[in-house]
Amino acid sequence: MTRFVGASVLFATLVSTAACGVGNDPGTAPGSGSDDRNTKLGIVCSASFKVTGTFVPGTPTAPLDPDTGMPYTGCWPVGTWTFTAAVDTNECKTPPTVLASYAFRVDRTDPDGTGLVESYTNMTNVGALKSHIKISANGQGCQAHMEFGSADGKEYWDMQPALLKGGTTTLVGSGDYDLYTTSNGWPWE
Image (cartoon, rainbow, N blue to C red):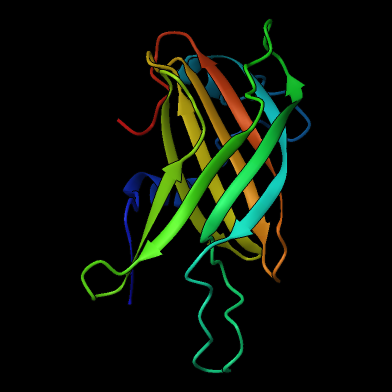
């Protein structure tokens, strides 16, 4: 049995409602969708990032699949994730801050003998920024969300490195940034 620390009802809600048509109309620029999402949420501007990096596997290593006897090929994020981000698109007057590099570690332990517990350690010096890390399985491997928010909640970064299954150690992905006016964009209060 595997238990996960930090599972989020909010994350599950976001995932289950992601296909509800909240975004822009196809072919329109961010913020110009007919649903005036940015106005409703108080988003002033947005930017996106390209993410690249490396993964160093940790212990315990992925177990054997009990059905096949072969190494488990699903999402096994245990190890150190290190990546960089570069601004891909930007509609803000001042481009969002991008750190020189980002890193976090995923551990799985069995502290009380009842099952593995997954924990996340932020290894990035983010100063006064709030941070939140979560990893989930997707059809191609593991998708991480390393989120940062300013103390007032008006700046929000969501870096999304992905680890493809098949024993690769390369991280690829994307990220998003939103600047808010008066509302608090930090979802983890």
